[in-house]
Amino acid sequence: MEILDLISEALQKGKAKDVKVMVQEALDAGVPASDVLNQGLLAGMGIIGGKFKNNEVYVPDVLIAARAMKAGTEILKPLLASQGVKASGKVLIGTVKGDLHDIGKNLVAMMMEGKGLEVIDIGTDVPADKFVAAAIENNVQVICCSALLTTTMNEMKAVVEAAVAAGVRNKFVIMVGGAPVNETFCKSIGADLYAPDAASAAEAAAAAIKARG
Ligand code: B1M
Image (cartoon, rainbow, N blue to C red; front, side, top):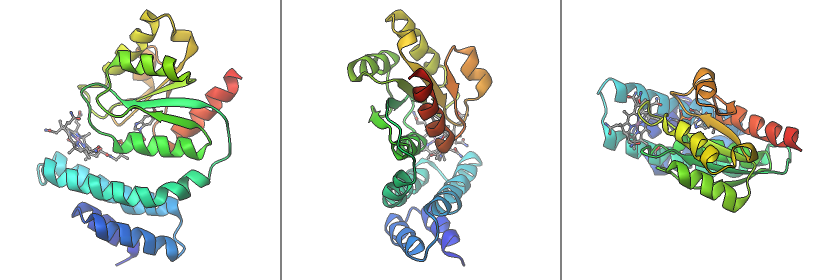
């Protein structure tokens, strides 16, 4: 079996230590970091996601797989982050209120760092007014909101509304993303940007910052 399949399999079983060792082995063998991420780690997480949906695995199984994913991405982080072109700017990122999913958010943050952006990560389960207060406090240019649940994606609208209420809507570009989110939803809530994945989110944030001058 190929190393990337072995990484996917170990991740599905939640074997964080094995994932760590094999990610390093793959890199040492010259496999590009992006292949290790997409064809190893994310492939494994995709399979777990499908099984979770079909009730073949349960929350604890997904949690240990998520931990293994984190162990693998920690090794990839410096490599993915060093591939980008430098661009100056500051972004704030968090997962919206009621939502604890942070793997996608962390990947977006990692790719943004790779673009030379300074990333302020305010974690998960973040209320709308906290997004806005932290954006003002840290003087960022882009507010990035992640949501993975259909029940929490509407919290992104609350972030837009909180920015309007605080009189700072024009000060920030508001970017949204996550599995249930799309361009139509982005427009419908009055956000500025939607990106489907971590790499395009980083591109879009850097471009928006550049466009604003
Ligand atoms: Co949850 N979960 N989960 N879960 N979980 C999903 C999302 C689900 C689709 C599974 C399923 O049923 N198939 C489902 C949501 C259904 C829905 O709303 N339609 C679901 C559910 C129901 C739940 C619970 C309610 C389960 C329960 O308790 N009964 C519960 C909710 C807890 C809560 O948040 N309040 C729950 C809990 C959990 C765990 C804690 C066990 C764990 C999270 C661990 C963690 O994050 N630390 C977990 C996981 C891991 C998943 C799945 C399996 C994987 C998510 C993931 O990390 N994917 C997921 C199923 C799936 O997606 N296939 C599922 C990998 C990640 C890299 O992708 O996050 O999509 P993603 O990020 C991508 C893009 O979306 C994008 O870029 C990323 C990289 O390319 N992106 C952005 C993300 N944010 C962005 C922001 C941007 C731009 C792009 O700009 C700002």
